[in-house]
Image (cartoon, rainbow, N blue to C red; front, side, top):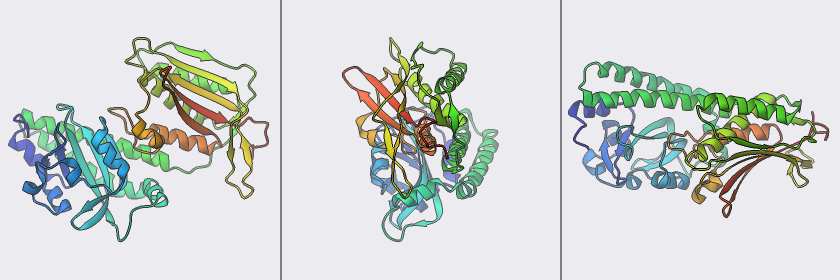
Length: 362
């Protein structure tokens, strides 16, 4: 541990009822609390000093890669962790420490009855875990409220060095609660009300929202096709999609000396998808909305997981924005694609949508 973390702070961490690890700058465990000893079936002496990958043995290879390479916060639900007692499915929260940005705090919330009998969670099981807001609310939010209250009480009694950790605990509890709220939105399966709408008017609504949320915003290059017909959409869901995509483009290009964000609409001939109904008919998606930027793009190692929950390249991101974008797009019978023009240094997110006159309105 660093010398500025005193015994009071360690006592706070020791008494947190969820397994907790501190990972240092060289990816080794620098601290484990009492609950971590019980969870992993090892004493602190056997845990402290080993590499994070040696103790956090995830059954999901994506989580293993994120633990090794991700530079921001990581959150995952229903992830299997190999322990001496078997595989235990848990909700994982990995956070960058504010005062030590090269250190990470790992909080593990084991699921009740979550020990695997055989195998790993399949895709359907993973989706069920993501879509269980009632279980999440009961098993995570209630204990988190207790942790927050205890940290606030302890903050009144500890020294300044320990108070930094109590503040961190309160901040992280609030962040995890917000994450759970977003997960509930992700799991919401309420059908979308689709109606004809002018796509350019909806884009302008989203741009106004993004401008209001950013003090400084690069000039957005707009190239609309005025001949486009009305598009079949849920306007509120569409605004949310566009806000997420435009804000991502703004964030990605923020560190560029010549920041560029572009929005283009056009009519295309090739867009289509296979309907999930019994006839499996091809549905045309001839309207394309393209959001582009000159940011660094997505690391190749996570391209295939880009629209999955809890995958993010942002240091303070939750990894739910693009997952929600894909969910909302699918609910509107639309599709979202990511492309990277490496020679030009441009990232594209292309949204393909049905027109209101093509017989898709049901």
